[in-house]
Image (cartoon, rainbow, N blue to C red; front, side):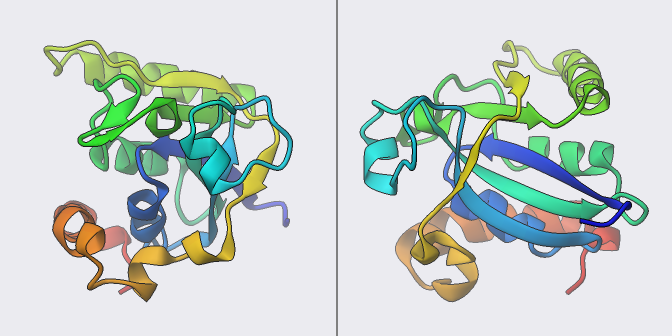
Length: 178
């Protein structure tokens, strides 16, 4: 990593949607879907989906902070999921689908708490996003990387992810690469 490269780790339901959105953002250098926040070493998708490992589906995002700020990425993240749903996003139910920000330094921790406080003023339900220090990140299986772009016609992608990406593109057009 260079001096201008930082890492953000977000979980907001199925990692395919979060992965697909951030791959389109100018200043994002890499996106990797994977698992974090659990107790099991080297978790697999099947073990994480069992709900027994404690891991969340997350994306690890490397970004150039001179091009895009953590605050902007954080705002984008909160538009991609419903932070008031505990351990789920829609029909995806389980602790692996929890809303979570794993912060990599004190500044990210403070920015996340500040944003949640600001967003809460506009939500009738409590925001339940977990804010925890980043621990070990385990990359997901190759099959899960860039899943949406590789499988746009798959039912989950076309029905659930495509509309979110359309809304995301409308809101953040100035930040997108394509």
